[in-house]
Image 1 (tube, rainbow, N blue to C red):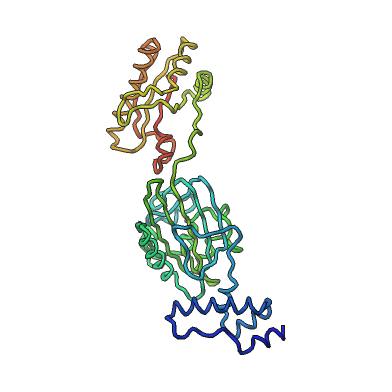
Image 2 (cartoon, one colour; image 1 turned 90 degrees about the vertical axis):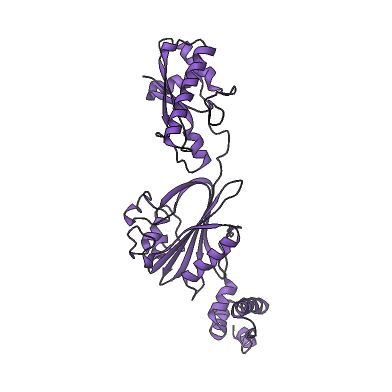
Length: 371
């Protein structure tokens, strides 16, 4: 150590004093990295060098992201930040903030201000460089995202009360808790995420619409005595992998009706915004077989829609579509009309969120109900 320090003594990297502040900082960090690498300095020697040349430069030179992590290509990172946590899920439902919320709703993350979205989820934890305010980080992200075509949907600060329904300042850890259940979220370094929001917090939500699906970016910025952090939640909305909905045969329909009194069917297809049945509506054959095998069975056909359009329009459309199924069963399969009835529920009985195409597809269904 003494020999290496002697070699380094009085030889700190040259200061880029003629460059603008931001350029000088970047240049100085690069010089420090080269300086350490060329001299092969160990931990103790590097610590001593930090005292001479500036600890923040050495820290920047040694910063290392967690293995396997990377910045999101559409978002990037704040200069000098380090990735300390990284999780990717190919398809999941996550909750983001899209407006002011009530801290009382944080435990279940429902109510005003909370929005459930589905898609590929990327969660990245960053530690932020010292002496950089969360406001500076937020403004940099805002400018960068806007330049990439994103729209800023919501931004708030706990100290101003703009994150909360009350519009009054409140504890920043509420914002940290809004990220997710602290018991299931990965820890940030060695602590629960919300504990990094002890002194203040800011939030930013941005959206980019693309042909292949929207990208939502939720940026949570926490302030604590240990330093500031950024929690980045990116959701790339998309349809779930196709082929996952199983078409039921007559026996499976019969069993479901016996167990629960009803069964929801997918694959009974209609022309867009019409009650015209498409010829590739596979479940009709199995419904007819069920009714033929069970001559005593009577069924009510209930139509359901997603939330696209007005409630009255969807109610009428669902009624007409259910009636079309009855007409097909009586006309094409010679099922007695007195065994069948029809009803429309419109958008009133969703089985999935209507926020995504995948969810809306689940809600567009025909239900067989045993009266």
